[in-house]
Amino acid sequence: MDTEIVDFTQIQKAVAFLREGKPVAFPTETVYGLGASVFCEAAISKIFHIKNRPADNPLIAHISDIQQLSLLCKKIPLQASLLCKHFWPGPLTIVLEKREAISKLIGLSTIAVRMPSHPIALSLIRNLDEPIVAPSANLSGKPSPTCAKDVFEDLQGKIELILDGGPCDIGIESTVISFVGEKPLLLRPGLITKQELEEQLQSEIAFPSDSTPHHSPGMKYRHYAPKAKIKLCYNKSEMQGPFILSLQPQQGEKLLNSQTLYAHFREADRLNVETIEIECSSELMQNAALFNRIQKACEGV
Ligand code: TXA
Ligand code: MG
Image (cartoon, rainbow, N blue to C red):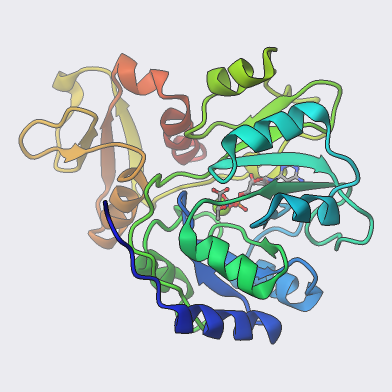
């Protein structure tokens, strides 16, 4: 068994900053988040400023206890409650109707909520005793941070504290599902798959269409993007190097999986790599979450 030592004094320090309205970065099992109390408008607006995030891209609220859900949402549909019981704490975000008292900066009429499983994230929320809203702790448009050093690279000098929990286990953002419309919609694929969700619900989940009113606003922006151009290669002979990512790397190639994707993107930028070549095997295309992030990174390049 791995025993993790979490420095409690640092968590208290982070809580103190949050109480003063100063955003802090903390690890979750997916990616690092940049957090503020759900009740502190001034700190929430600082998050948008620090990240240079468009104001119409809403934030996820993180809770440590299922009881906190009713502070944020008007009602919890039975299907949503089934998923929370099964997948929380963990990398699943559900979108519900927001209580009016909750700041409009977080979202207009809806709110996305998740209970992370990372011990530091849970401890931070418990000690603050308030839900924490947190987008990924990167500058908008850059790949999400999967270790404390990535957060430092983007936000040094802009925030007071980064809680270091080592590298994130999952490495890509949570699955997002909405229960706001008539039927559940999968807004963002993640480690928890559509099939796993459907199995629990015993019913089908749809994808949003372009005309769906509650389509996740964040998905319209170019995301997860390195500066380098990304080239999808459908057979080995197309790949020239030197920066090749593959699920089954051969000599000189780099191992691609959800934990390493964003780290490779950041490394490519540090090295000023011109082109990242990705071996696009059928196995990779079947990995909905990982392939979604790669496609997002390709968009607009
Ligand atoms: O794994 C994660 O979800 C990480 C960690 C820190 O929890 N957070 C994260 O947050 O990825 P962010 O802000 O980078 O991405 C949140 C996504 C965006 O695409 C946003 O548009 C969508 O969730 N979202 C947030 N609130 C929403 C809402 N009320 N309705 C629809 N989509 C929403
Ligand atoms: Mg993000």
